[in-house]
Length: 344
Length: 278
Ligand SMILES: Nc1ncnc2c1ncn2[C@@H]1O[C@H](COP(=O)(O)OP(=O)(O)OP(=O)(O)O)[C@@H](O)[C@H]1O
Ligand SMILES: [Mg+2]
Image (tube, rainbow over all chains, first blue to last red):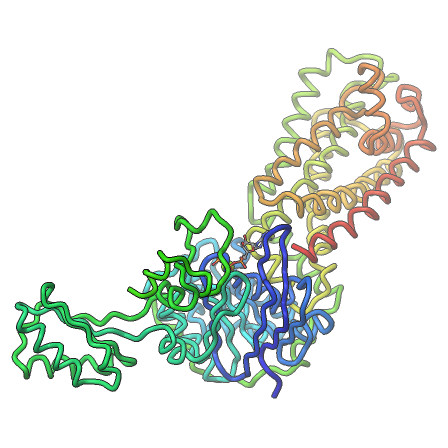
């Protein structure tokens, strides 16, 4: 079975901006893959290259064994694209939208109608199928957009930030939908800015920054490279904090990282599986008679992942790094201030 | 909202199932979408037509009395072919705003990711907009007749003029579609009006070119709309009117066809090139 994605030295420039800067990536088929990165990292550019929408200035990109530049049509037959915005025609009904896309995939009229009906059922829009899309809610449009990318029964579903702009509930619904698709054999490549989304959905996470892959692996691998979950307990008094520290230290294999701050009456321990360890931690603390003020599970954020991998914060809009050129992703270049941040 | 039931597994598609729509099918599918959109958007359907009709009424009744020397034609007979042909420009502008809108909405990305020839995406759009513009032609002609316009050159040539106008519409739709790719946004594409106004007003459409200042005549005499309007005018009103226009059909018809061919031949590759790197 060919690799899902095979990218070699992919370069894409937009005038002065280098959106893809020699991106190398090999992703085997059969795993939901999430491309994770901050604003401007090159996620959309990469996904558009995978979907044959833009031609790289240099490098090679194979999708399921087909070269995107030379074998464009073969790639297009295999993929379904759900872009960063819901690309559906508002004046047409949900059904008309799907029939149109199915027709363009080359299905006969009858087949297209059948495919559209099936997909509408599957995305839970059968009841609203014959209403103009302009009467749909944002979440419904997003689902229809997903439907349009599924109507060709693609081997690979490509999604650019699928859950951006959705409320938490629609978001989990979409997650479920993506999991089901993957379970039924559809390959999924998606981009996201959220670590927890990658964690929830993907078996393989690719972290992109400044047009390069800076880390890659399973969510667990990445998190262990990056920093672990932390169980943190605030106690009523300093003695409690000391007891808590010993309880926590006895808990896990990673227990050697226990931190205790008696003045703040606080103790914390790093662990790879926070949610799994939390009940034991709670039970242990209660059994030791520690009076708990607050007990929290802290998980690494995307920002912390970046901090650990690159030595600087993600450059989200409004952050100070935004105006300047993106810094190179090398830890050797950390300044004293960033070093301090990384070690904290 | 209910949960999304996507549990049903389905067979993986093979390459063959998505062989991609052949060019004519893809083109007509996209045409159908453009037509549906316009029919269902009253502002598109009426916008161009209403403003065209309003202009026609204003010109007919407000300026009508002030313009003379029309080669024996009443003002309404002089100006109606001008209005009918320039309605093509206003209608074709929708191709530009439409392209810009589709780009902005990501619809162009979706269509380009499908296994169809890129040319069908723009061609479908242009054919759809040509059809709508032709509808505008019919409405404007009907209104012109209602306010007193009559043909004096025979029904056959008049219908020929209408047919040529559809051809002109096709060329202008390509022009505006190509420009729509450069507009950046739907709002940006509205600025295409700044191309439409000089082309339609600084032409023979509403007043004889000979009444304009010399430098303006130079422009008016060498731009497509004048050639197109005067072709239609001579066909609809007979050859007598040619004396007031400066040239005869033997000049305007080939000129208008040359402009039509030139615009189309130039704009198709430009539109396709921009589409590929949109
Ligand atoms: N069409 C374009 N013209 C000019 N610059 C572009 C274009 N597309 C992307 N860029 C630039 O390339 C870089 C990468 O952009 P890209 O959209 O791939 O980032 P992204 O990771 O998808 O970001 P976001 O999370 O904001 O969607 C950015 O600096 C962006 O400004
Ligand atoms: Mg993006």
